[in-house]
Length: 359
Ligand SMILES: *Cc1c(COP(=O)(O)O)cnc(C)c1O
Image 1: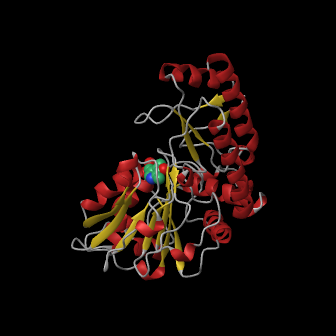
Image 2: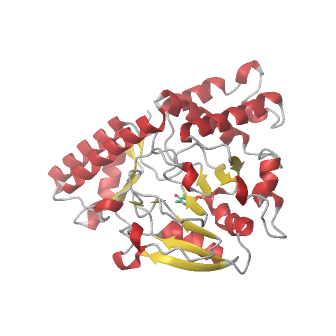
Image 3: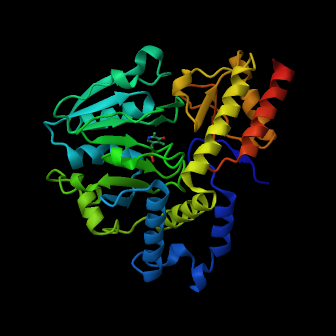
């Protein structure tokens, strides 16, 4: 039986996509092979990768002066690739620290350039987003990095920072494709696939042309955006199955009405869940209201001893993977694009029932 899977990543995928992949698994497009068994350089597979790129461009309205790269090494690989590509060891890079993924990005960047943390939400225990007016952009910075959605803390920017001529770099791993964004405001957008795109093993990087060709000497070619762009992300064997699956997800998103429609559905899902939490007098979400994530919703109950019971009973009821991140405890519901409204409704009904029995 298929369950509602609230995991933070790898995360739930659209059932229609899984069914299609299943149907095509052993005989893809009449080839007598699965897509995993064909050459990445074959006409048929190159067409898959091209279609995936075209559909992503259409969904996000990516301007022509941006390259779309299909890389490996996850978002974590990009923590290193970014300074190698667009900073020197003497450059200053500005970072906003809104939680655990920001921190990891900062740790890696510090190994490769000078980091200036221009806003740090430590004082609120990372339950807030800095005000737009509080962001300083150091003159001459090589780039300005932030994490639009902190997957662990459940904190999301409701605005895009204005960094003037300093390239804006964003780790969109857990919120890419969740609502429309204006790509032209960014220098680099990157996202590991396993939250809102497809299976793990693929990392999507969207990079503005003027940031290509600047990698420092010694940058490995697979981390060099320019080298990868020139080879159509096929300088080495790409994660072919991941690209195929991402392509199916992009087609599904188009059938669902694109990012405006998905964004509206995500807003509704999040509003329903936060309302149920806020009005319960039992569940609590620690995040400031203007920083609440549409994708990852952490919540607690008054008696932490009951958390294990909550998670176990929820799993019994077909609501899987609701335990909070190991570093913060509590519960967390990740409600990415592929989580249907019915999944959120079922979660709310379970939460109300649990409260009646234990509250
Ligand atoms: C999951 C996640 C990462 C790490 O992704 P990997 O693909 O495991 O490297 C980085 N940043 C954010 C915001 C994430 O959600």
